[in-house]
Amino acid sequence: MRFHLIDRIERCEPGKALAGAKYLALGEEYLADHFPKFPIMPGVLMLQACVEAASWLWRATTDFRDPVIVLRELKSVKYGTFMMPGRRLDVTVDLTKAEGDTASFKAKGANDAGEQTVNAIFTLHGYALAPRGPAGAAADAKLTEHWKTRWALLTGALRG
Image (tube, rainbow, N blue to C red; front, side, top):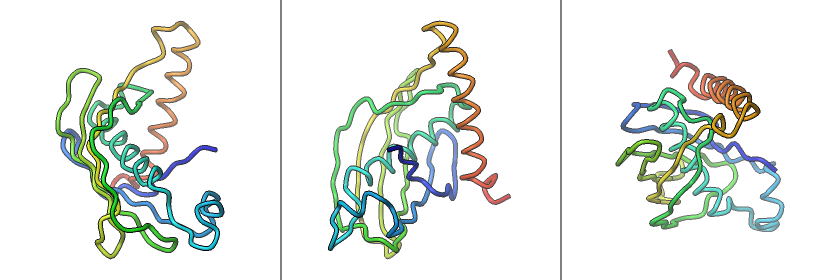
């Protein structure tokens, strides 16, 4: 199973901040298991939405330099209220430090009523597969094309 949790990017200031949204529908398959009579978005997926938003900010900041972005370090996570189906998760991320292929972020998630759902501080690392051989270079090209296409869909060219 693969998740794309950010449905829309509302604003982006490369090198600074990004705001995005996740619209939680009752039909999302993981809600059948978490929990059948009281469906809520799992905390780890709220955190993943924050990491995904930060990845988008890092791609925008570095002009899509790194086709692969991974979570390197998680320093602090705090959860608040439940994220229920039919609500919108608003995620904001701030770039706090960038050094080479590594960047640190502060992220906040809140539901559409403004109630905190998740806060986190973490570090992401980006890299290319090309140094691993010709197949890696081809994979880099496919990934970069994929991310740029998805960026265009999520931002709607930032509604402009």
